[in-house]
Length: 321
Image (tube, rainbow, N blue to C red; front, side, top):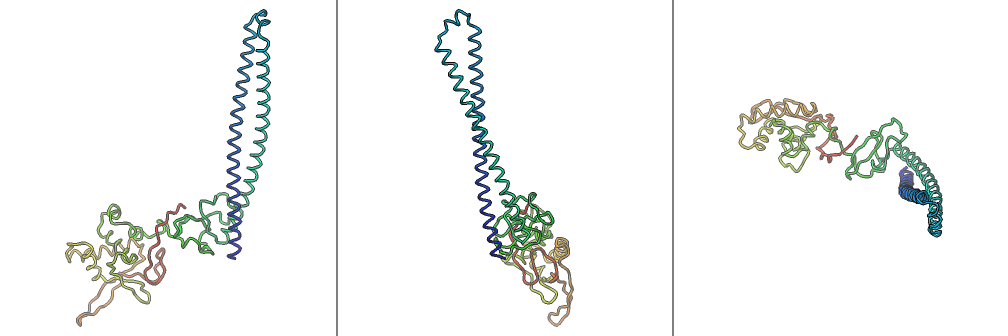
């Protein structure tokens, strides 16, 4: 199947190149046609002006003066008119030929375009990812009459039938659009300046940075721990309190405790409840106490992530539709 797809792609590339050459030829012929028509108009104007001059001269002169007019001047004017008529006929012939050639080239170009569109439709139905710049979606006869635009790791925009993976796996994996992400993921991708301009709420900024800490190893200060069984990752409320005090210098311990609850509430809301709160009995120094945990269940549907260890977030994709 891969060899067949590659052969179709090579044929598609050859047709596209031929189509571009034909399009360039049409543009050249159209330019020549415009220039010929312009010259034709100039010739007609000059011919008309000469005829008017001759007529005015004949009308203005008295019969005796007309008889005295130099014969060679009249002959010269008539010869000029004849030359202009010959040029006019030649221009008309050239214009007719140019129009015929342009029409033939346009017809051939249209046929090539139809073949390219048919090949593209077949490729897409087989799961191919085609460069968006080479595809005209409204002209393709495809099942569902809908194409998905997305950006791959190579930074280029492609189209595909929805949920179709590229069998050749070229260009890297598709990246997610901004609108596909959870609100907390969108905030986590912002730098500090952009995050502050987006929200004035400290718990929201802390929630965004907390989420970023688990997905971006460059952050360094990551309070999340790997879970087991039904829990993918978790962070203890006590660890979160210390993390907040490291993030916000000068915050008192009592205020940090309040921020823990507010940050958890913000993360619950911004993750569309993909995370949860669980209480667990802990033992320390022989004493038992109940500790809150912010957890990410293994079955939580987080865009761009699968179960297991924390993945690295994909690059932001500039997807148009």
